[in-house]
Length: 108
Image 1: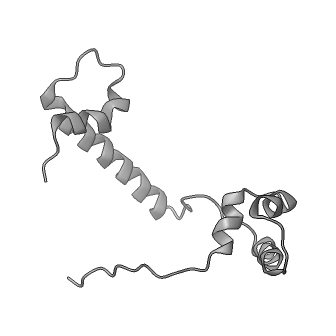
Image 2 (image 1 turned 135 degrees about the horizontal axis):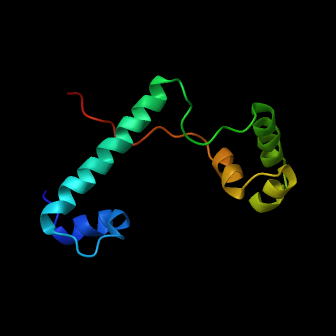
């Protein structure tokens, strides 16, 4: 489904702040060039063995958080997070069991 010009401009507006007026013919190639450079940089970082994304918390800390979550009459997620010095989102993520995705990709 082709994107409208307005959608393309909205998606790439961050990169055109300095431009006085974006020509309709320049929006698509500019977005494509930026996306290509980002993908190339990520591929290069992976090939160099760099770990992408946020570093995981220590396994011992995760185990202690799981134990705190399993205790009967436990405090809330925010209290546990403050107790262990992590973000409440981290405690929330640990509290939920991993569930496989419900949609399976079709085989090619």
